[in-house]
Length: 284
Image (tube, rainbow, N blue to C red):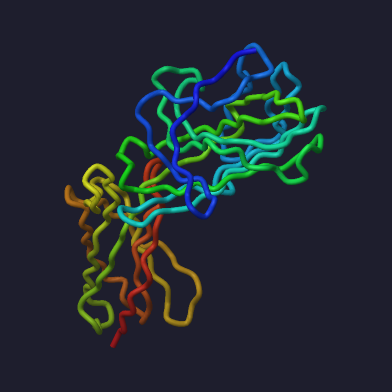
């Protein structure tokens, strides 16, 4: 058996677990019933199924970060996310604590902790052999930096039965933290003569957590799309790359019918996708 050090965290007044970005190594408090942490393969998506069991008999049946969806954060508004796990132990599971971290393993001295909890939270049907456990983290962009846009791993510390014993698993699930984008669109002239040139402009920017402001996203491919006024579906007209400052500009003579024009950004590993609303251009 071994003891893990207590990690720093803030407990919100509502009982939700507030996010605390820590640059120093941290760990979940508790005494593990096994001699080493779980060695299950790291999940490659935000939800895993029957992936991990350590030698204490503590089994993670499934886990999720933010319901499997990317965590998209801007520059000022906090975002609440839910982490959850279904776990099992023959002695029953009473309560759990969670940590979101990145690193080669939970014991990696170079790991970074994104969110952690110090208070135990009772699981549903506590003391049952199979229970559902969850927690809520509040992510504050003021505490983020650009390099935090990456994949984070979820760890769980569980309190077992009524004998004050503990189990740990560092590979419950993974979740992706992404920078929020902004995208604008303008078209001119309005109206446009049939078959004549239409100029479509815009700008793609994204949250820069280092300076807490939105900055232009350079060199990104963005689709220019069109749908006729009485249609429900868009078609891609062309793909345009953003400038060094994130601006977009192109021209088209595909102006045979009135309809809506928009930009469609597919997103990247670090930045969420986004489509603009369509701007109506009438053809006369």
